[in-house]
Length: 564
Ligand code: ARG
Image (tube, rainbow, N blue to C red; front, side):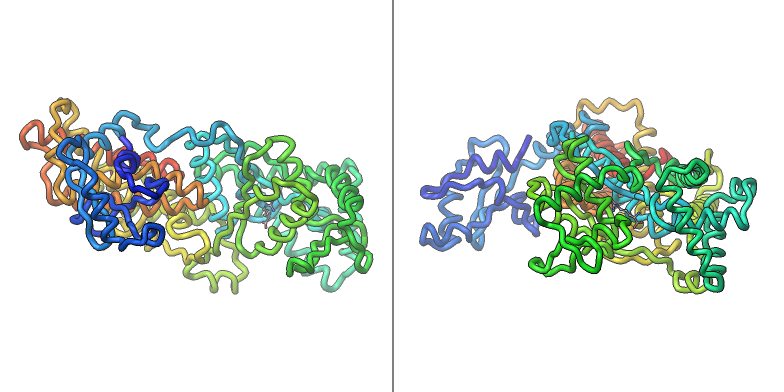
């Protein structure tokens, strides 16, 4: 039952042709009504005061014969609709319970492809706390779009090209050995890379060697390629462990090197279209007109750039997936980069340039972040996860020492807490990560949501054999019950809005509201041991709440322990 649509159909105003459904909202003060229509917009056309218009609408609706709407009142330019709360509760709760794991899912996408470029790590570089946001925001969007009937395509646009790989080979050949690197993996590669830079200060000839090795990679020299592939394999194996813990998968690992042979046709076309100009030997697209510095595509020495690869990748993705949208979940530091090359694609006359979206986000730093940079210490994401899980375990041991499968629960809580921290505020905000903050069981955190979910499940387990078919939904229409029911009912719309705004935090916020509302309800209302039709209705309310929490957390990539 779509109440907004229903109410919209009751509204008729002579001389106005509007989609009323899009104007109907929920009043701030729920005692005024469940829905309202503001009439200010019509005032000019009708040459009447909003209040008079509201009164005329109110008069025209006959509530005596209406099954769903209980009263209609005009107040201060709004028409307030009070609906039959028990009917509303029944329809909202039963829908959630019926649709269960699919509640909140929809087929809006009709199978259209949405490419999501996220995580996009760099080979032979550590997977650190700075990658947290792109990884978990991207993965959440991936699940959200799939849930809405799109075909999400997760792409890890690997940073696997550039002169640094020449440096790495030189360092490896001078100071490395296979066993140590195999054992130490990225850490060891990083050490070699750092050593190269230290040594190259005194011996600049190392840089020439590095360039020579990079050229060998480019020309497909066997030894160079073998080493390069090995570095890549080590890196992917290492980050793969983290992806597994986060329950993340990619459909493609086509990285920068994949586009080596796909840039020339683009450059030729740019040239033909008269878009390329030469500046100090480099090839650029001038963007003066758009108040941007030129987009550099080929350096004077013939080397292509990050932007060149991104443009080639976009054409490849359009041809391969025919995307409806192509999202780039990348830090806001790269705003200019994306604005520039999106513009280049637009100037090439590609309409789909408008479907390229930079989903930018702010920085994550650790509370003791400054300290660790000064020490030259990189904070690995896997270490952050480990530490969080360890802390979660000690909290669980303290709160609930007799619980089974402590390790499994600690993993879900600890990892969930870290994931949540990157999804809890609007994307663009910079965040400071603190273990105490993210693991606070009473705060706006993942553990709080998980705990609330486990609480619901525990009540439901206790009442496992209760017959709920006799539910009388008048038992859940108190202000607290009504508030919770409304949040349950709104959940599917929140998912749609989160997809439209590329903002998983909208789901996070909603879940916090649901959990707070549930806990308030639970504190003030007895569930078990009431008259059977009362207990039945309240159990269904708890079940619907648990479904919303579980589906929401699942979309965000946060595990839901059945008990805690
Ligand atoms: N590897 C890049 C970095 O760490 C991010 C790549 C983002 N994706 C893209 N298509 N440019 O900065």
